[in-house]
Image (cartoon, rainbow, N blue to C red; front, top):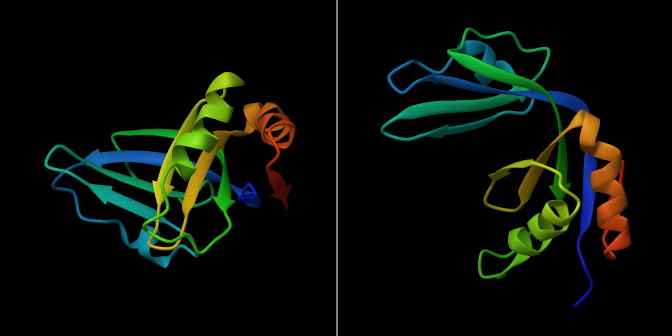
Length: 127
């Protein structure tokens, strides 16, 4: 099976941590792209860096690499395979998923190393 193609999104993203009982800020819901996850302990949101929200903690300057899909929910090992390429290159990741695909967030400063590692392992990267 051929390896996946990943599309690099141009914008930079920020990962925010909010109190688990906090309402989802309206700025998040108005953003053109966002990711939300909530557990009993926390509420996390990922939005473009230019979306200002109040949060308990935040970490910005991430770039998103989308695994082009759609990927079937029955596919096995996609995230593990790509994640191992990043691990071998010593690149930290933050992963979010949708029904159709996965997104690997990479710190902007690590982007060149991440792309080189993917290309060296037979993946394609588009912008």
